[in-house]
Image 1 (cartoon, rainbow, N blue to C red):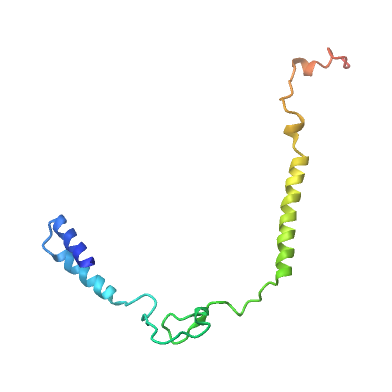
Image 2 (cartoon, one colour):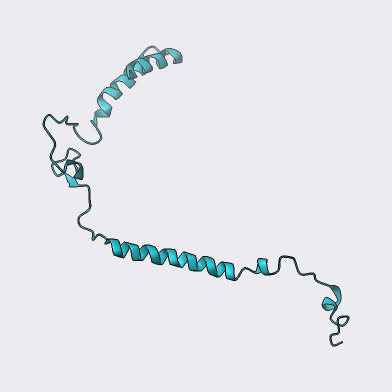
Length: 125
């Protein structure tokens, strides 16, 4: 398929086949590097029970998919962390709503001249 596409691209570009040969050879050999994760092995017998828990990328030392070195968090500890985080954000929202000055004064306070009409409203001269 790739050879046909590179051949069509070469014809469109007006080349004489050099592009198709170079693309075809690089696709066939993958630039000499092989597959990115090692040799693909097709299973010919039943897989082990926990085969999906092992990352086998073709190296001599397959790795476990689950990291068994780090400590895991228990369900009650996770629930405590989740509840405390949720409580923090609920408290923050309630404090923001309690201290909402825009809802207490829904209009812009009017500013009058002459020191906000201090003398006219009965203030000291």
